Length: 401
Ligand SMILES: Cc1ncc(COP(=O)(O)O)c(C=O)c1O
Image 1 (cartoon, rainbow, N blue to C red):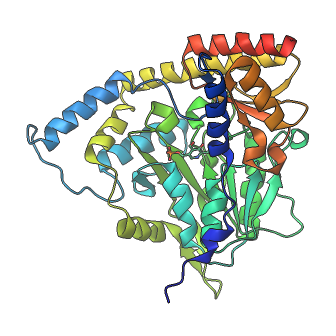
Image 2 (image 1 turned 180 degrees about the horizontal axis):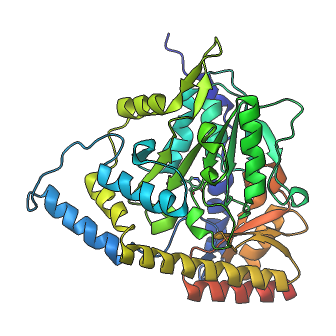
């Protein structure tokens, strides 16, 4: 008899976005004329920037045989032209010691955040923040690690947990700027995690998918700004929110040569060759066209264009945050992040329903991201300025009523 992987039945059903879609559809059916504005999802709304589009068109010509060369299968780790730009611009220009051969290009951060756990023994203890981006939890549960430790991220700790444990985890997922809370971590806070990991032979999996939204001076853009992080941290980056690549699909993972875990006899094992082996076995690389598009982000005009788009979203976030704050709500995020995390002083689904029914605005109830998310809603800045202004106006009126 063929048995299924029963770990799949242990994954908590993700009702969140299905339930939101269901409630929104029911509301629209009852109110066919309602013009619903969606500030719930985390997808971008602005198109690819011209520098990327131009580079991708040129790459299509290469693949169509009109250029100097036809590119078929590429290197699974990513083309050198992209890895070298990443190392130079995202790291070395910030004084961070990361080399091109420590970067592995992929089709986005979700796959890498989800697949990385394959490198570790089944009995490792995993810790994640609560509330959390669900991929870290679900992929570990699928692999049989059911007992995930939750680190509450609340107003009391500024939404950044500390490495203080009764029972120590082996592997810790950190995500800053955070989805869903929009909180950022200071260098001192991250340094504490790095020191803890190095002192105890642990590993940090650092998700920096929203790094490009950091504007406040001094907030670290990379875990490798912390001393000693090269030995105990893997970092994930994504072009999805940085450059509108949610549909194009591209990101990368940084695995420094020194980063290690241990075999059953306590010997150090380098993780870079393991991750390279995993990727070259199970993944055939992001497309040449995609990687040429990603490379264009690093040109002078590419940098200017993506910065302008992110500035646009950040201004949306600022407007949302200011409106909710002036209506008397405590807000986190929305400064170095596209997400505003609003303390609604009550049930998060009730507040979601109120904004849906009375303002025709869709948000995301915090409870959907974990127990510690109850009492909050997440408002996303990914929308047109006109829609954000209209949504703010409606929310203000609905909250006054
Ligand atoms: C925290 C976080 N990490 C990773 C991802 C996935 O990024 P990608 O589109 O590169 O797969 C997202 C997407 O929403 C995210 O919020």
